[in-house]
Image (cartoon, one colour):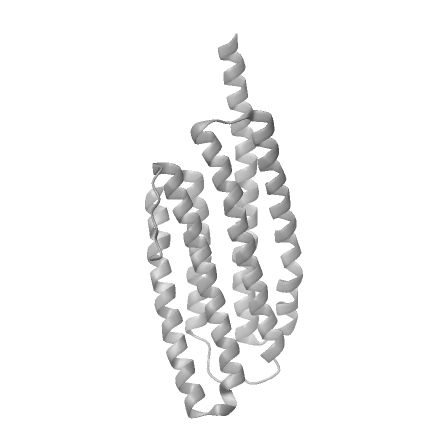
Amino acid sequence: MDKFISADKKVVFEKKMDSLQQNLHRMGGLVEEAIARAVQALKTQNLDLAKAVIEGDDAVDRLELEIDQKCLELIATQQPMAKDLRRVATLFKMISDLERMADHATDIAKITLRIGHEPLIKPLVDIPRMAQLTQKMVKQALDAYVLEDIELALAVGRDDDEVDHLHGQIFRELLTIMMENPRTITQATNLLFVSRWLERISDHATNIAEKVIFLVTGEIKLLNE
């Protein structure tokens, strides 16, 4: 009889985990969309799109709270042990990284509202490339968690290196522009902030990948040293 009760409890736990993982992907999808729209708004100087990104941050915050509560309920009602407990705890920590990514996308949108009325000092090429990479990293990190795929997690770390490279490239280019024309300093500084926030989004995705590796192997592996 106890075996049947235990089996039923496992089925309930897995169903609840499936629901949590679906919400996790919903949250990740909102974050990916926010990154893409924020940089598109900057590139096209679309102030309405920038405002929509800022307004959309509330949806991410609500989903974070919902997942947070469901994680706590799952631990309290199902009392998972060992690997199952680590799965819930890892997901619980991941949503904090996702929420911070959405905040950084909002920060980028605010930059657009700040400088969107003036001509861009240069065509944006590397910043959109950074945005595409960070979106890819978010998706890969979440897929790595659901699939418990270490190779996907390691791929996130490799993409983080590329994002860091682009950030350095943007920094050097904008610094040169500022030195050649001091009137560009304000906008160039704002664009540097955009690059920095994309780099921070990349770091948060890498944090998730590191959590996945710990979940699967029990070992701490730093990917962005």
